[in-house]
Image (cartoon, rainbow, N blue to C red; front, side, top):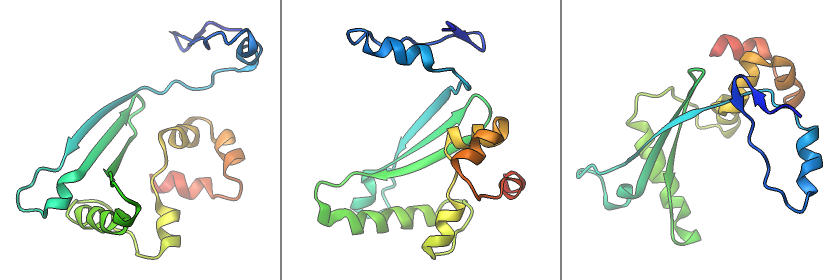
Amino acid sequence: APTEFDGYSIPIFPDCEGKLYYLQQQLVPFSRIETQRSSWVNDDDDDDESSSSLTVDLDVSNFGYAVGEVEYVVAQKEDIPQAQQTIANFLKRLPLPKFDDDASQQQQKRPLSKLEHYLLQYRPDHFQLLHPGRDISKLLKDR
């Protein structure tokens, strides 16, 4: 098995009684994705108290793609609807592309993950295998 990919050492699985050795021999690296993450917490005094529990993470990859997430951790399942509303209110204040409220539209326009973007840009054949029926030319044009 190769020990380097794109000039970097390939991580070795911990030896679990030799069980993973066979798997490691079968795997072939096809990408290297490095990410630099920035994280923030919302501390706006003008916000209601609940929005102070928001965290925002922004990941920027070594190939220039950035993706972010807003998270609100709740203690009880009953708090989820309020957390979702708090996140929605926070996102409305940011200069982001606007999505329709229709869930199907949001699903179609959700940002690609770092790996999906990498595959779309550099390994479209792999992307197509994972997403049969998606129009790659439209996705590439929208990026």
